[in-house]
Image (tube, rainbow, N blue to C red):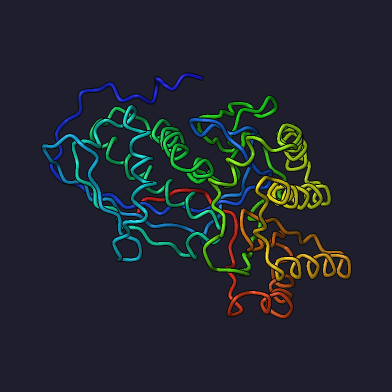
Length: 358
């Protein structure tokens, strides 16, 4: 698919000063992507639940300027963050072809998370998608001809260039990113809302995130993705992931929750198996991660429950379960799993619908 449609070709009107605020969610992949090629193209398709409570709120103040360079400051939780600037600068450089108007503005970016940064809850997904939505609000104001559907698609396209998983945080509750023969409209360039009917059991699905380790990951996702280039099992993994997405699509439509559990847990463990077998190898799970997994398996067997887990690129555990088990599972989490979390902290979340303007 051509990227040319995302290049801004209109003559924009002049706006001296404006500001936009967006709240965009994190997401949790059910079928994982791990490995990519430039520019931010996934080696396999992925699908995720969009979350509701784990989000980033970002405001960008735009002020017209005369110099034609990338000019911005970034504040996180009210503190200027110089260490965030290289990644965001690289993002702005990547999108210049598609958003040349950013050279006309000094941007002041203020961001805050509802969850710990860099701890494996996809903070780059919510953060980069929030910036992308603010840019699209500016583009809409500069060129009122653009449709909302196009702006969402372009926001996903842009967000991908900052963080691949960010392409899945614009819409919800289920988003596919990566071209897949069984998912109509799917693309490597942007995420799309899952286009088929989903069984009622998977609607308003619950996700309680156990904060096993709130510290910054020892190995970033960027480094982890790059280690797939010479990984001995990479090609087989990409094939497996695409096959699993096809299987999961059928599962979601039929409501086969037992198969959902098996596939989602297998995907989580496979993601970490890729880390364990890369060179150099690394481990992002912690001892308490494994304790939680074993507790979940025991509870499921003892109670004929449909609880399961998944993991992102970190130590924290996403406990997934249908809404009709909410009361029982939350009691189990409080009684048995909270003790494995730092300061007994966890986040109760569920599927959401994506970005919202504040």
